[in-house]
Amino acid sequence: MNNQKHVQELSSERTEFKREIGVFGGVSIIGGIMIGSGIFYLGSYVLQRTNYNYGLAILAWVLGGIISLFGGLCYAELGAAMPKAGGRMVYLTEAYHPCVGFLAGFSDWLIGGPGSVAALAIALPTALKSFVELNNTGIKVFAIVLIIGLTIYNCYGVKLSSILQNISMVAKLVPILLILGGALLCGKITPDLSMGNEMASHGTAGTISMLAFAIVASLWAYEGWTNLNTVTEEIKNPKRDLPLALIIGIGGITVLYALFNYAIYRVLPYETVVEMIKSENYYLGTEVAKLIFGNSGGMLVTAAMVIAIFGSVNGLVLAQPRMYYAMSKEGHFFKSFGKLHPKYKVPTTALIVQAIISIILVLMRDLDQLTNLVVFQTMLFNFLVVLAVPILRKKMPEIERTYKVWFYPVSVIITALIFLGLVISTFFDDPVSAVTGFIVPAIGVVFYLYFDKKNKKEERTA
Image 1 (cartoon, rainbow, N blue to C red):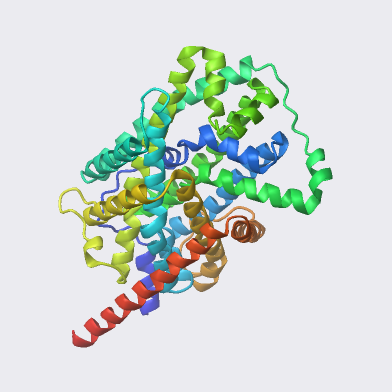
Image 2: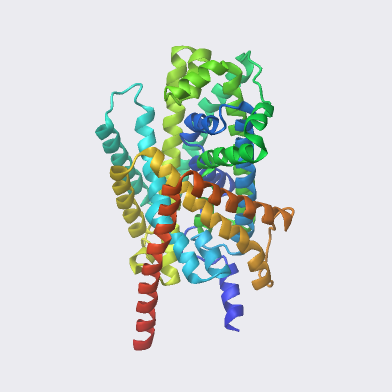
C-alpha cells in the first residue's frame, strides 16, 4: 500500500511551485542554455581532435546531437512519468538508491551547476575582449557581477526568469541565422568531407578513438538539455510539454550546429582554418562574419555571443537550484534548500549558495578546465539515467507513461553504451578531469551518510 501511495505521489502533478512554463518556454530554456559561446569556438576544438578532418568533425557534431537527443528522449519518458522538481536526481533515487540520486545532485551542486555558470560567466567578457580591453582580473570581476545580478533577478520568480529566457533566445538566434544564411549563400568553397585519409593513417580503431574524443568536445556545446527536467514542477502540462520541448529543442539545435560548422567550411579556406586554430584564434565564426559583412560582421558575432552566453547563464541560474531543492525534500541535504520564498515560490537559499560556489570557481579555474570537469561528470550520471528507463519500467510498471522512448530497447542500450564509452575514453584522454569527476561523488558519500545518520536520529527521538 505504501509503495502504491509513493507511486501515486511520484506521478502526481501537485506542486508548491507556480506552473508558468509552456512548450516555447521549455524550448527557450533548453536553447537558451545549450546555444552559448560553444557554437562560436568549440568547432575549433572538435577540428583539433579530428586532426582537422572536416568529415569527421561534422560527423562528431551530428553524433553529439543524436546522443543528446536519445538521452533527452530517456529524460522525456522519466520526466513525463514523474513530473517532479530535481530531474535526474529523482530518477536515480527511484531506480537505484537514494544515495545514487543524492550523488548526482551533490556533483551538480558542487561542480556541474556552478561550474557551468562560472565557465559561461567567464566566456561572456572574454567574447568582448576584441572591443573592450580586459585583463584576466577584469574578466573575473565582470563574471562575478553577472552571476550576482542574474541570481538576484531569478529570486523574483520563474515567470520573470522565463520571460528573460524567451527574449534572449529569440534575440540570439537572429544574428546566428544571419551569419549562417550569409555563409551558406556567399561561400564558394566545396569542403572536403571525406574520411579516407584518416582511416588510412590511424586505422579504424584509431579513427573511432579520435572521433570519440571529438564528440566529447561537441557535447559541451550540447550541454544543458538535462536542465529542463529540473523545472518540471513549473511546466504547465509536463506530461505533454516536457517531451515536446526536449525533442524540438535538441533536434533543432543539432541541425543548427552541424549547418553552422559546415557554413564556416564553405567560407574559410582549409589552410586559414588550420592556421587560425594553431595560433589559438579559435573564433572561426567571427572571421566568417567579417568576410561576409565587413567590419559590422565582428560586431554581429559579438552581439550574438554576448546574448547567447547571457541566456545560457540565466537558464542555468534558473534551473539548477531546483535540483538542490529536490535533494533537501528527499531528506539528505540542508533543510533551508527545500524552502520556497513565500511570495515568489523560488528556492532562494539554493540560488544564493549556487552563486557563491560559482564565484569561488570563477576565482579558482579557467574556462577549459571548467568545461572538461562539467562534461565528464554529466556523462557519468547520464549513463545511469539512461539505464534507469528499463529499470523503472520493470520496477514501476503501474506508473502512467504518457510518453515512451522511441525504438526501445535498442535506442536505450546504444545510448547507454555510447555514454559509457565516452566516460572510458575521457578517462584515458583527460585523466585529471576524470579522477576529479570521481572524487566529487566520493565526497558526496560522506555528506549522504552524515544526513542519513542525522535523519535516523531525528526519527528515533520524534
